[in-house]
Image (cartoon, rainbow, N blue to C red; front, side, top):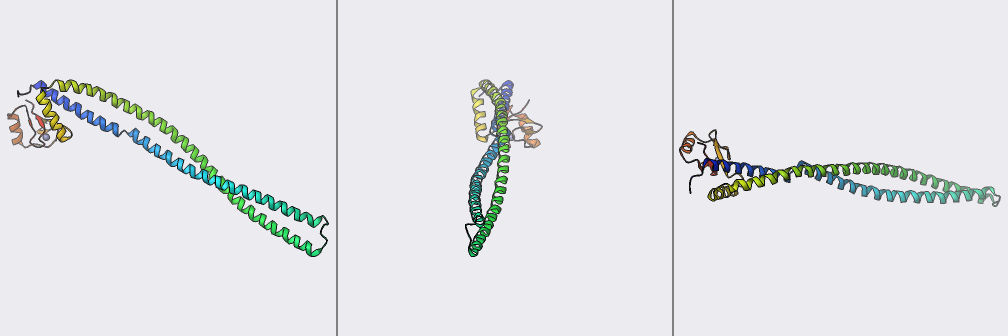
Length: 242
Ligand SMILES: [Zn+2]
């Protein structure tokens, strides 16, 4: 194989730059901050929905409790009124019977009072649940808007990355086609083996791919050798500038 020309080596380094940028863009696409924020917002929306379901169930339960107590209080009050009216309508003349009715009225009054205390507690609970429900409504709406905004932002961010990726892929084809087959294949093989860069350049006594500082002896040997060789440290292709 003929030694590559200086232009071909420049093109090889351009191809390496394109491939590095493509890898970085793919990683960014997978890892867009907008995507992560969107995932978090969606998690929060699910949490809110679950809590809202619980609150709605409790509201149903306490609402039913409230109506039951109200019905019982109405029934007890009616009974008390009926008993009380018997005390005054002259239908009962017997003093012992009157006393029994009075005792019955008092008992019913106590039961009404107990029911009313319970009702008050239940109504306070209903109020707390309704307040929480309204808070959840507001936060759900806020989260919904945020998800909408983040979806747009994510799509915009991805659009820019995808557009740049498209341009780079076109550039990559031009660059790869400009290289002799043998050189391109060597580059592809080394890239595949390292899962990253396939070629470095000797700059400031180090290879730009692995950035390990080379000894003066290694550098002297490289400078005396061919313009394309192998990095003594990382075994990638190494371009040695003239
Ligand atoms: Zn190296």
